[in-house]
Length: 137
Image 1 (cartoon, rainbow, N blue to C red):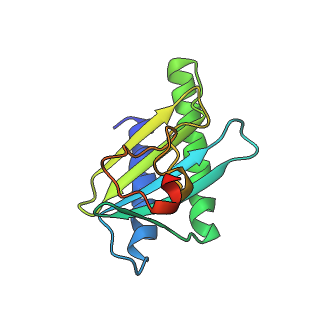
Image 2 (cartoon, helix red, strand yellow):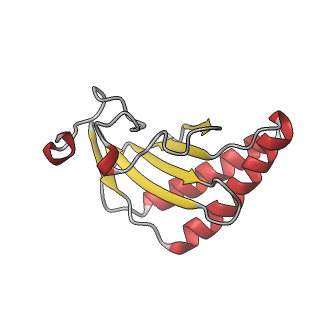
C-alpha cells in the first residue's frame, strides 16, 4: 500500500471514530480540510442521514490528529505531482467505505457547510440533499 493510501485509510479511521461518537444517526460523514499554506489549516465536519446534512461538533483532539495527517498527504501529493492540494474532502460511510477528493486550485470549492447547501460552491449536488428553506434564499 502506498504512503498516500495508508494516510487516507488512517484519516478515514479517525473520521469514523469521531462520527461513531455522535448521537445523531448518520450514513455518511464528511471532513473538509483547507490548507492554502502549512500555517493556517481549517476544518469543517458534517454528517448526512439520508438527504439531510447535520453539523458535526468536533473535539480538538480529532483535528490535532487529522491536521498533521492531511499535511503529510498534501506533502505526498506535491512530491508525486509537483502541485500541492489546497483542500480535501474525506468521506466515510456507515459501511466503512471511504473516498477522498482533492482540489488543487480553488480554495472555495467543495464547501460542506450548511450555509453552502444549494450554492455552486457546495460539495453536494442540489438534487442529492434537502436544502433548508433559509439556504435557498
